[in-house]
Image 1 (tube, rainbow, N blue to C red):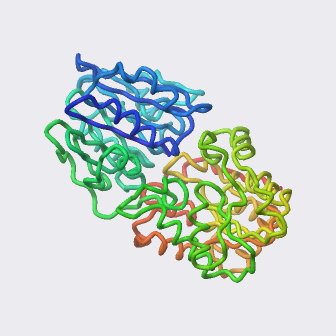
Image 2 (tube, rainbow, N blue to C red):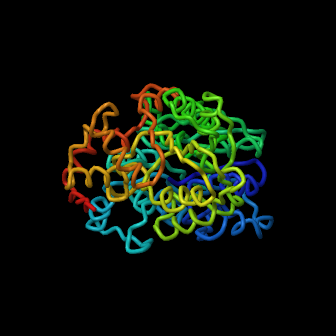
Image 3 (tube, helix red, strand yellow):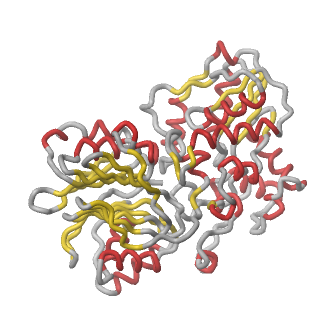
Length: 485
């Protein structure tokens, strides 16, 4: 998942732009970029690789020399962006968050029409460039965005910068969030509301699914009304989002505490302490401790914010390196104790098995009881660049091992009361080498969030998408064959 930030100011916007974009660093590890309008009305972009450094270390130097009234920024999970274009609408810059599942098909159609793609990275067409070309086919920017939404399968929210202002558009299903904040002389739009408080902004509105809003010196101008309801990604609250952020008015930290409470309510384990895997597992553990009355203690401590998330990098090698280096087991706390270890989720299971659990055992923990705050992940995300293949998911590897072959129908494994579900969880427990393993129930997770189930995207747990044409599209794609171990 990428993070977007844009700002328009009656004065110089660059300070707000830099820091506002930086407050989205937790959402991506590949590229950071900004674009702003110069005095001549032309957009200027700056993009840096942030795999091994933080956004602010690349962009802060020299920022005092830039003067502009409006700009956009992005922390990107894959593609270099923002990108700039000269078009029939004039010059503009654009950045996106989300994923286009039918990107190859749409790119082929455009190429056959004579459209040229120049932003090729690792042999792959840049999603932001594709989106820009699709918008350019419209008779206006607003119409072009609407037309783009009609053609794509997936989820795209975007910021489009012109010399007159910023178009902000949230994907039609509301999978990815956007919020607008204001303070005297400035208006901003962000994926994460945690970007607002320290910069003096207060939330003005949450952009609705499919809504297009134009930010200018005149204020907010509605270009397209939003759709009722949403299918916002539930994983935002469980893992992806920053604790101080709110989506649809619901705070991330509070939801994670709620998740921990639900885990404790259904648990009977006798342990000495509760701990969370930093950073996202901490609030789940606090909630568990509040409900269970067990003491919360830190058996794992993260060494400085310099190490990013081990879940988001594209390569397994880098994910493993971060997992190894960022967490340090505290022997004095772990020694001889039975530990309830709260985690946001278990996706691949490799880091938990090879690094986290191993560190605790080496530190002298007597028992380790793992409590993920969400159900087993069963399907790769089709709306954001997070999990990419079935092969990555430990739950699917467990099913393959139990069945002796790859199976398409996993419905019995989705039922927490079924024998097959319990066999799957037991296989994962043994694979991880932990004392016990108990997942969150889907209905408890939904209740912890506080939105009706129909307003949440739960695809990665239940395999049902928010777009009607998703299933028919997937049926045309080559099926992934899972190799059973």
